[in-house]
Amino acid sequence: MKNIYGNNITVTLFGESHGAAIGAVIDGIAPGIEVDYDLIEKSLLQRQGEADISTPRREGDKVEFLSGIKNGFTEGTPIALIIKNENKNSNAYSPYENTPRPSHADYAAEEKYHGFQDKSGGGHFSGRITAPLVATGAIIRSALEKKGILIGTHIKSLHGIADRGFFDYSKDIAILAEKSFPALSREAETLMKNEILSAKSNSDSVGGELETVIFGVPAGVGEPWFDTVEGVLAHACLSIPGVKGIEFGEGFDLCGMLGSEANDPLRIKDGKVTLEKNSNGGINGGITNGMPILFTLAVKPTPSIAKAQRTVDLRTMENCEIEIKGRHDPAIIHRARAVVDAVSAIAIADLLVTRFGTDWLRS
Image 1 (cartoon, rainbow, N blue to C red):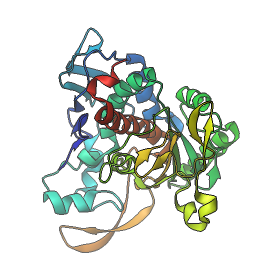
Image 2 (image 1 turned 180 degrees about the horizontal axis):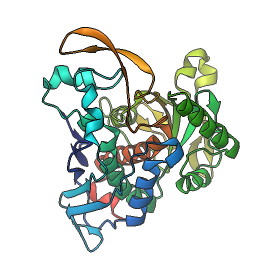
Image 3 (image 1 turned 45 degrees about the horizontal axis):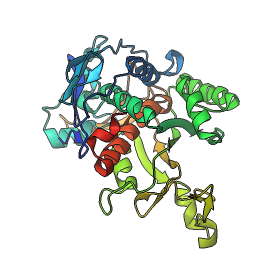
């Protein structure tokens, strides 16, 4: 397995869904960065989601720092953190020991790890592993915010129900920071929650799109060809369980435009270069152009549903059906926004310290 992400700032993930603990090791963080414990707690609560539209599994998600932090500041040495798993129910997964759940990692992991992988709750492939990732992102986000770089994610659409787009970036990001359900429109929030509850009542699940903005990144950041801003962000975001696609700016809609429609004209305003619009999502040639970085992710419906589904029995090599029992989400998209915010912070911080040096992240 490749569990390390990053170049100058690296994050290593470890643990399993029903193991003793999950955690992360963060290396390359400058010394002297103040740790915002409140932001870590708030981010982890956003990842948990609201009880009626999320999994019944509730964990305390208390972060324990084993190294790298002293008196509330980073030391510059590797930061090791763990989150203990306390609300475990491994027995619920024993019926699926040899019957892979459709659209989960079960069968693919069986082929790669030959049955030695932890299968309970998805093991290392579980969305549970995103908790230490969110804690890591919160440490970095607080440092970015002091440099004027803000990150926010909302549900652009859920099963066909659309939210309004970003209007005032800094104001909208502040609104999302205080919301447990990441919709900018109250009407959209109500409709989306009802749609999730409807899927839940029918033993089904729903997916949708998440739209993220990274506001305040200066022009000139990015390392073409192979560490472009798009490439680094895509690498991070496509590692999130359930994310199946990404587009920047107008994305695939650019394919139906003329060049005169797709291009972003440059102008001088208040003595600085700016762009009249942002169809390319703040990136040209793999490098930031000073506009907000804007991208959209496709999040699939939760694969664990209580309906009968066709699968196979790997012992008998025969076709069969299963009905998945246990504690599952009728939608993960509202919880995934905290993970997207986290990996976006990690990715953009890595690009920034590559450009300006490790100590740049310290305010």
